Length: 189
Ligand SMILES: [Fe+2]
Image (cartoon, rainbow, N blue to C red; front, side):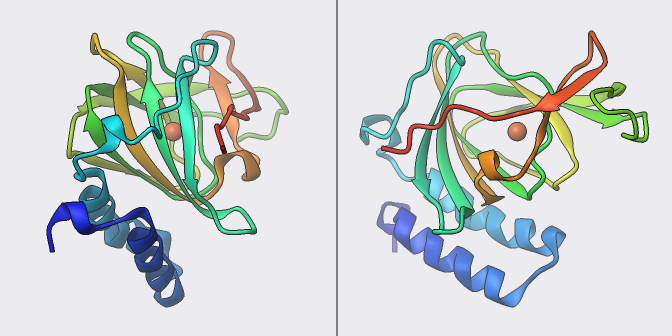
């Protein structure tokens, strides 16, 4: 079977099978990685009509799948050039595969103990650039930011253990050492 024969529905069936067998998040993301890369390698993303642009947010998010209870969410992200996110966590596991373009991912670790509401002190720990076919993973408390460093819209396939607007996750501003709830605009049509 060629990569073009692997659909979102096929992918979701495989994800459900993994989740039925494994509850350890490290194991789950390692098993999801090659499947996400296979789906991302399909040739038709740019012409699929699934790309969602969002000038105000800087990146568009198209929902490709979620379970009825918001678990197991698959999204197509499109990042406008020189746009991206502040540091954030996900409060669920994540697997991200590049489809087109370049996305710089910067990793952070949290220095405070989280006991002061609204306060967070982050330290930058590393960075790398996601390109087509490459994959990155996050565990629930990992903190990263994403920025399209290329001159074209970049596309990436994102899979999460739960829809990211239903996990209670946070966004961080390292310049003001603040933490706040993080909800994104998602095109669910
Ligand atoms: Fe993220």
